Amino acid sequence: MTEKPAGKSTRAPRKRKPKPAESAPPLSRGRLALRWALRGLGAVAGVYGLLVVLFSFLPPPINLYQMGEAWRLGGIEKDWVSWEEIAPVMGRSAVAAEDANFCNHWGFDMAAIRAAIDEGGGRGASTISQQVAKNVFLWHGRSWLRKAAEAVLTPTVELLWSKQRILEVYLNVVEFDDGVFGVQAAAQHYFGVDAKDLTAVQAARLAAVLPDPKERSASNPSSFVRKRTRAIMAGADTIAADGRSACFEG
Image (cartoon, rainbow, N blue to C red; front, side, top):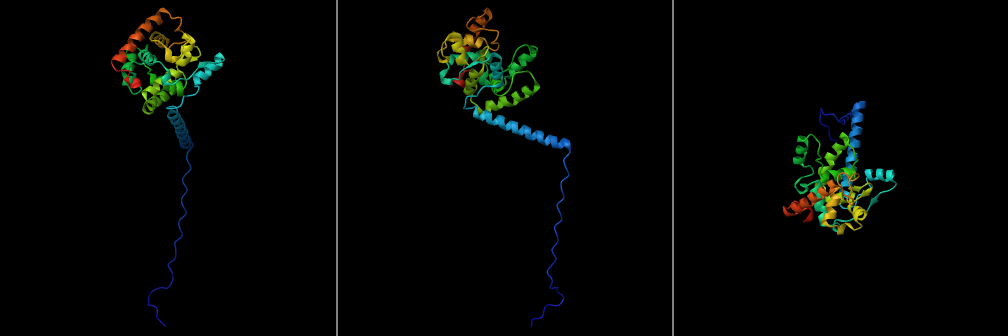
C-alpha cells in the first residue's frame, strides 16, 4: 500500500458560496420620468427620421394643415406631379420669389436672418427648406416647440434630400389659393393648363401670390401682384444667368 504524504490534507477545498447580488436602489420619480421622456423623445425622433427617408423618394401624403383646411372647406384641390412634369421656369420663379440663395445655403439663410433682425422682424427669412420641413412634417404656428422641431428637421432634410427633391416637394405642397395646394392644381385652377405648360408670366404670377395666397390672386392680380410678377421674372432670369439655379436644374 502506498503511503500518503505526511502533513497534507486529503479533503477537497470548500467552495465559497457566491454573495447575493445587491439590488439597485429604486429610481426616484423624477429620474424615472426623465428616462421615459428620453425614450419617448427617441421614439419620436426615430419616426421623423424614417419619414424623412421615405419622403426622399415617395410623395408625402396629406399634411396637418391640409387636413385642417379640408375639414374647414369641405375639401381641397391637390394633385402631385413629378419634377419632370413641372415647367423649369416655375422652379426658378419660386426660388426667385421665396429663397434666391436656395442653392447656396444648408437650410438656413444666415444673411436673410441677419437682415430680418436688423429690420426688426418685419420681413421673413424662412427658406424653402424650412417651409418644406414645416409643411410636410409639422404644423403651422409660431410656438417655440414648432420652431425647435423645424430647426432640427431642416438640416436633416438638407442632408438626406437633393435640392431638386426639396424644391419638387415644395412646389407640390405649398398653398396657391384658398384650399388649392401644389403647382399642378394651381395651374389648372388659375389658368386651365398643366404645370409643365406654364409660361414665364404664369409661373411668376403663381410665385407672386406666395406667401399670402388667401389675399392675392394669380388670375386677377392686383397692382402689387403685377409689380411683384415683373420682379420675379427678372429674378428668375438672374439666377439662371449667375448659376444660382444650377443645384436644382443640373
